[in-house]
Length: 162
Image (cartoon, rainbow, N blue to C red; front, side):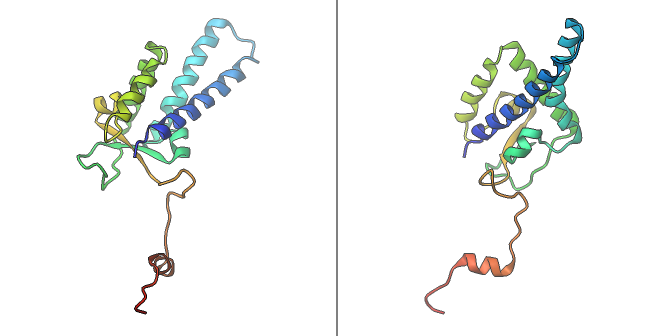
């Protein structure tokens, strides 16, 4: 299953949050130069600050139920080990720089790379030895689904031999 659609939605959510915060700065009477620095601070703040907490999720990734983990050799990883905070922040910083320097073209290139790889990794994942995994089958699923024994039995179904 390709994670690129969820990754793109998560990026769109984060970018929308950035846009809303930037729109709020229009109402403040600030010099143009300072306002430009403030916009870059907002962009990098929304993109980088969530990774300082070491969860491997930005606001958009949390909503889309995806997470950044260390890359493993297995296609379906057995452990969800999050890289250290330094690598998470550096990974996102490099991704932001790629996006800015390519005027957004990097997102298109990352999509092509991701959809053509079985593990769904993009260029910045390959550089930092990470990958993005889907935590739930559907976005509406709860992450911490717990089943009782009676629920397990009802999900198994009944055999005709009973």
